[in-house]
Length: 296
Image (cartoon, rainbow, N blue to C red; front, side, top):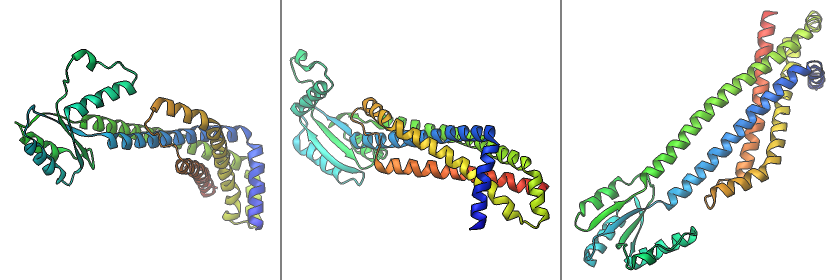
C-alpha cells in the first residue's frame, strides 16, 4: 500500500512539473483515440449496412414468354434443392409490374408504366441465397435453361464492391492508427524521460539509500498510465457529446439501412478507448523507465 500511495503521489507531482509534455502527450493521445473510435464506428456501420444489403440481394431469372408452367415449377424445385438457396419465389408478370410501381412510389418518382400502355415485365423467379457471394452454382443451373430463362439479373458486383471498400477502409484505417499510435508512444516515452531527467538527483539519492528499481520505476509507470487515462477520459467525453448529432446524421445519410449504432457497440468503443489509452501510456512509460535505468 505504501508503494501504491507513493507512486500515485509522485506521478501527480510529475504531471504538474512537466505540464508542456503532459499536455502534448494527452492531446496526441486524444487524437489517436478519436481516430480509433471513429474507425470502429465506421467499420461497424459499414458491416451492418453490408449485412442489410446482403439480406436484400437476390438473383432474378426472367422467364421466356409462354413458358410451360410444369417446366417453370420444375426449375423452381431444382433451385430450391440447392444448399446455397434459401428461398425461390415465382413472380408473375402482374406482380412484377406492381413491384415496379411500389418501388417508384416509395422513391417519390412518377409511375412510368402508365405511359407504356402494356405490361413490359416478364414472369420471373426470385432466388434468395443464404450467402450472396456463393451464386455460381445457381447461375450455372439457370444458364443451362437457355430456352426457359431469357435473362439472369444478379447483384454480385454490388456486394463485391462493398466488400472491397470495407476491406480498403479497414486497411487504411489500421495503417493510420499504427502511425498515430507510434507517435503517441514516442511522445509518452519522451514525456516520462524528461520527468526522470528533472528528478535525476532524487533518483540517485533513492538508489544510494537502497531503493530498488521497482520502487523507482512505478511512479513513472503510473504517470504514463495517468496520461493514457486523461486522454481516454477526454475522448470518451467528446464521444458522449458527439453521439447524438453523429447518430442523427448517420441515420439521415443511411436512410433505412441500419448503421449498427447499438448499446453493445457503445460499450465496445468505450472499453477499446479506455484500454488503448491505458496500454499506450503504460507501455510508453515502461519503455522509457527501462531504458533510463539501464543507462544509469
